[in-house]
Length: 80
Image 1 (cartoon, helix red, strand yellow):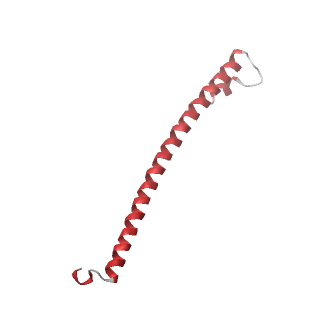
Image 2 (cartoon, helix red, strand yellow):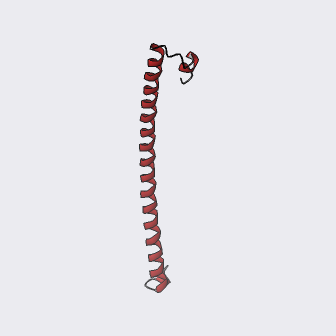
Image 3 (cartoon, one colour):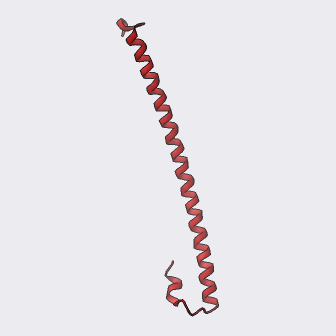
């Protein structure tokens, strides 16, 4: 590159590679953000699933204990 030092092409190449580096940095930052968000959503959904499972279990035990006949007994265990 000795012949293009301090020329218009040299300055354009420097600008180009500066922009490419900025885009790469922003892409890396975006990817890290998405990975963190994905992990938080996964944890949130896991907690929600556990909570719903526990609430359903409590409801089904209540139905079973009180002999509520409008639900078939087989339905009580079909959610597990």
